[in-house]
Length: 164
Ligand code: FEO
Image 1 (cartoon, rainbow, N blue to C red):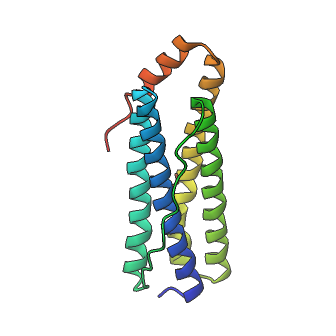
Image 2 (image 1 turned 45 degrees about the horizontal axis):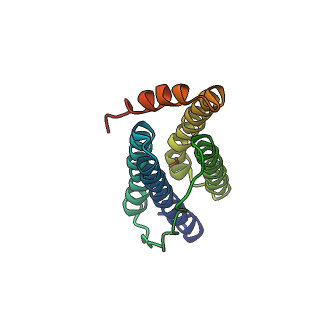
């Protein structure tokens, strides 16, 4: 059984994951609007991953007999600037999520909730991967710079992401 403080923090994380899904769906829509179909595909896949993350928090709360309380989802922005700016925002968001997961783990350890600590370990690893993916794409975007051809090659590469 989860204590109230931890249940509340896990509920807040569920909301953050749903907001992440919403944010990446907005980025996918923005990319489509700009004609960048590969970027749109990449963010649509990211949207699906975030829904899975939210689902993991939801299932864990239910499994632990805690009350699930769904909060208001913040409206994501409409404009994201250049592809590089969009990925800078993506990386910054993932760094925010990583901090949030680390704080959750610190709370679980302080409360001596070992089951929750183990549950959170998957997310600790996942965040390393998410930040690495964003850094890799950002590096390529910086190389492409203002080069339209380079951007189109990357768009085609991002169009191949799938399988969820
Ligand atoms: Fe669910 Fe991208 O962190």
